[in-house]
Image 1: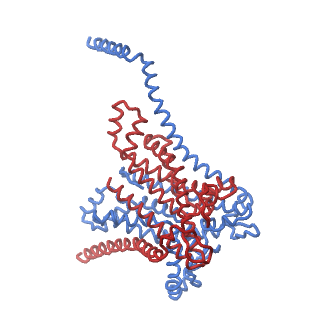
Image 2: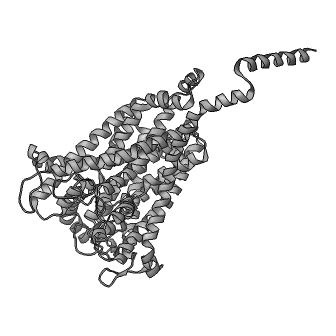
Image 3: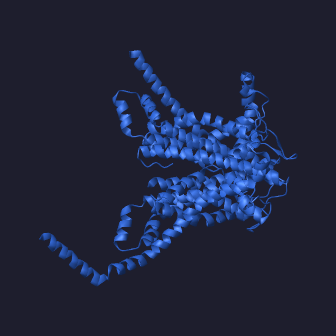
Length: 338
Length: 277
């Protein structure tokens, strides 16, 4: 009985609604016409968001297209050939690939422990009032343009290495393959040092965010068992190690793509030498130095192929790193700015 | 037992000290770079430095007026392209947080942010310099725009997300359509944050050299034409640093000082504003 009454009630209500606002179809029409603004606005923003997707695809396609002559001529040999001879039009990128990987990996090797130390200090040991200013100083390091790093490397670090450090190292450790050869100043060591300074901020800030995202319960549990601060940090580090790996990969991506600072200090000589004193050459540097001088189409195409390789390498590195960092911070479900 | 306890204490203190030392090592370069830039650059700074044109090679004196105006024009071009695109995509990301396109775009902005700037320069060369058959300010501005785009997009999205959801609910409850809510209520609330993000992206673009080397090329003369090669601070620093003249090297440091002051100033302001939130 009550049910029938309620149904009647609903019917009455609907009738009143229809008489004042029009039928359901009419209402929908009104709603739609008001949503036209929404429809247009949403689609405009969508187009611009889609432009970013288009941009990345276009970058890949257009660079590939320009690199085709070189890819067809040299094939995979481009990656393994030592010969870079613009006069004979023989191009092999191995010295540049070697220089890029060698300098970046060495830089990571030095920067990673340092950054982890800084990140630990910032997230675990720093009093709150000091944390902001200290993080700011580290992040300001990332804001300095690479050309200024290059200037600093060229006029300060390289002369210092040539005068004081390299002769000293050569004398004491000359037998080790790393420290062979005459001290030039401009060379692999200068590039590695500059790269280390440059990638330190990004590895530090991401590692710090990863460490901060780890819940306090883990620290409390460790302290409750009587662990010292450092023993607690070791536990936190093992929880955050994937995130730190992501940070290191992002740093590696930066180091691989760094152009100006490296170009100004590495000596720009296409050779493969494991000695830190020897000049080298990297993929970005050869593009920066020779692009405007590339007279023939094949020469230009070879340089663009190097750019395309860089593009692919950094995209892969960045994708893996971002996925790692995102998944680790999402795991601890705390918003982290990366 | 006691000795093991002491060993643990010792290890604890040593490791904390090591972490502290790594902090010192990490911020030492910042002070060294600033100290050298100031001490070597300050002697080049004078009024003439800002308003005079470069002198022919070998002659001392002259200024960087053309590079200052060139950098200004390039940044203006970059902003015209990247700001509307970045802000609108940021709005899309913030309004459609869970759509598939939004996740893809968010991911690609991060990827775009990590692409080396020299590669962006090559892309701008292929896209604009090759069809135009000459180096131009437009190509340089476009390259800078691509570098600014991810930063503008990300900060816009983050700043919009910071606006409390109750603002949106209040507006929708008053019967205001969604797009008006976004454009006239949410966006103005986040405007300050978006603005600092824009400044940050400009600071980054101002310091870029690699993408300009073969797009805007550089120019020793006064030029404001958009379809011609144009000078810029960073390329000028690069050219002057490589040059064998002491006076040019000194001017390179002077120009670097100008650049660093502008960029650090913008960055410090950004951090002060964004930390208050």
